[in-house]
Image 1 (cartoon, helix red, strand yellow):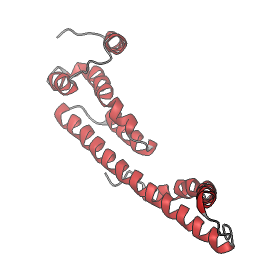
Image 2 (image 1 turned 120 degrees about the vertical axis):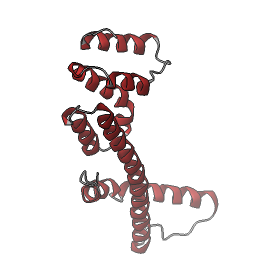
Image 3 (image 1 turned 135 degrees about the vertical axis):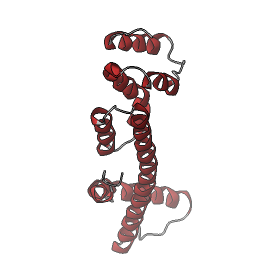
Image 4 (image 1 turned 180 degrees about the vertical axis):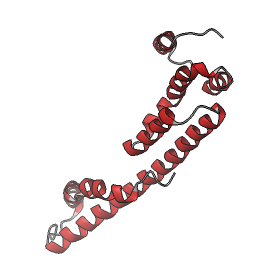
Length: 170
């Protein structure tokens, strides 16, 4: 239990990542042990919490949610480190679950927009010709691909997400 400066801890983590990338750190054990240490180690504790959550945090594709967790890590009081850890892990779990639901919902929305574009294009008269065999299958494939590109799902989803997503739910 040496009082190592933050830059030494960072160097040790860099060495571990460079030379032992397959070895995992038991962050739960490290943080539980450090939670009982004197509070003059707050900076080191926050740094290690950040390191322990980096992979999970980067897997959350919504910057708004990542920023919320990062702000909580930075600003929440460390009077009770156990409560601090529980809050961080609770937010991570919540946003991970919400992000998974959001990915599923946006995929469904994209498919619906794509299907609507296909139906609209067929009504207008695209693909009105009927062909037989392989040529018909290839034409259908090209037609569907073109509808997917031109359906505008990326623009629609980008403009719909702000109404679906918020931080206040936490």
